[in-house]
Length: 388
Picture 1 (cartoon, rainbow, N blue to C red):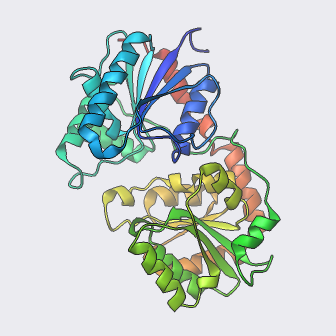
Picture 2 (picture 1 turned 180 degrees about the vertical axis):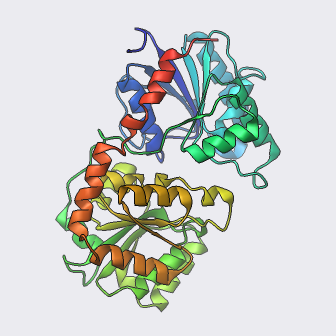
Picture 3 (picture 1 turned 60 degrees about the vertical axis):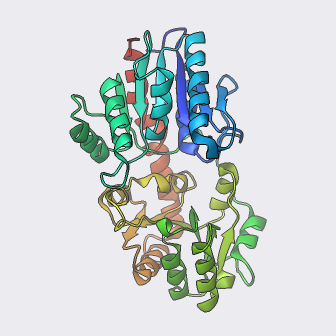
């Protein structure tokens, strides 16, 4: 059953969309399912990470700099309230906990707008002990007020239900890429540049699509490259000092500077052009740092799926369950460079072979691990929502 002939939904998100392909995928899905999404953002400005349909209206609530956050929040809340009062939305669709104070202020201390359903969709994990209590209060109140709560996996959904004493289990929609996402062909010249000085077409190029930071364990990955044979090379991204400087210094000390490329951060569409030039991917989480990282969902493997890249992930339950169930690669201890190197080499050189792994990952993505297939439950639930 399709939505009503007039089913406008207001998607509200604190922050721009230029680094959020997962949210762009959600918005595109809503439009393709016949809903009419309007997107309200704070600090917009940049183009979305993925092209949105022409019918999607993007409203910037406050385009100024974030250093004036209290005034910024008040200005954005005022504009959001006017927007909601001027237009008749079927639902207010809030993205992530950081957006909730904005919506609460816009509705003067409530999440339930008269005549409008409220949906809360979180990609976050508010870990007890690491986040301020107001964050939990806002999320708890939002979940209790919502007609529908959406999370990224079943384990987080179950914990959310327990922590906030929710009657209904939040809907779990994995953070997979869209099957309709355009993946560019491999560019031989770009691959040659990424392999760096002395690179050969037969070399193995590892993709690590994260900026250098302690939360991404780049130091361990650089050490792993030094333990791999000389024909293994790494493509990753620059981060902020002083951690990034330490990564560069370590690469020089280990004599792998010519085998490690630290690129400038780039738009998601350009990132895809680079990923299809690689042979394998890697995505690591520092699970010792927090329960949020230990409960890591496989969202950072998502772009590798669409590009057909087998990957090495963190040996935590949520990632392992996906990787081994669908044969997407392998998992290892990201704190141990020797384990990382062994996992990558075994995946590349072991059976069934790298070409067969590429074909398998792409086939699994197209048959089962794409957003539209998992999100049909979301579309059905949204169609059943009645304004409150």
